[in-house]
Image (cartoon, rainbow, N blue to C red; front, top):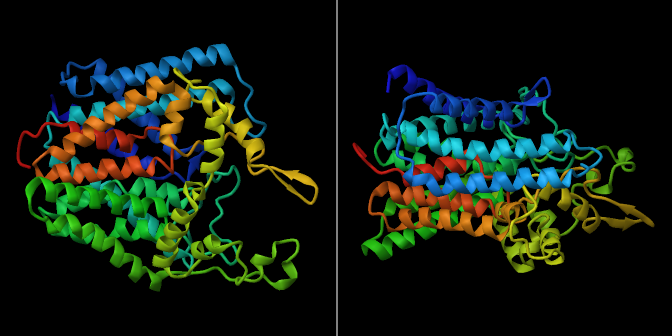
Length: 461
């Protein structure tokens, strides 16, 4: 392969990954993250019209799984022709098409990483991606500190995940790190996969220990319960399996756990709570906006604690005590599952979300002052669960097929004896844990993690 072609494919992926990290912004009402997706997809025709040959055996099953999910989506969209909720920003066919592009980008990410492995070592590929992760983390930390250092934050030109503005600065609310994303949890889901690979590089070069400070701080300041617990759990699992497999402890695998716990304590000094509104402003605002001592419940109190460690780990205790329903809309999702017949082939990508949106609107409604109030009226709702998304979109066939794929990659990482296997295993496990509670679509970062774990090592690891 010519150097020019190499640079094109590497540049396309890095550019796409960088633009995906700018989730909070749009250009001419087009989300920058979707522009990044378009950049990535240009690699597909370039690859097929080139004379490049790569071994596709490692991801043949993934290729056919993506083809199956896409086929179901297309066939269902032809037969359904659903009406989208009132405030949806796209038509039905546009929404389904975007879901198809998203799952295709997941496959293209895997394809390009394998293509890059023909001219770069796995370590060099990881280094390129790690620099993007560090850069986005630095931008995110600047955004966080701008709120109490009287610096200008970035101009957030994209609507928030609720369809309105991005609600960062709210009276009596604790500042969470939104960074370059629309939600702190989105930043956490994007940041977590970079921590294991950066700490792997730190075993080779000490400078990466210094650079790892930025994504770890960025993650902890999001106060994302899902992100922090997923990373701690992943490294705990990997450390235990390493001990069982090798009959010894690898102290460097415990460093991430200690680093996150230590950062949680240090971050207490970086916590900031927005001041209350003037009492004359309540009403029309709720009383808790004018009196910061008012909380909805213990979970709300823990969430808005100035103590970062308490905010994260107290919520963990409360949620464990209250069951999985404590995670956002999980209870509504389980009700939706129990009301439906078993789905063998699913309703199709996008169509499944629209069907769920109408059901969610009813399940989440409340009667307040004799009036029915809806939580997300007229909006398309996310499952916030990768596995539920795949089940409702592709049925049991799609779900079991996907679980078979990821299980094989996790197994390979766990039984592998190379140092890198442990870190790639931690990366993949943490992503799959987070995707149980946050996000729902197979992302290019998930594609990156799967492809890195499937590469055969050839040189200078």
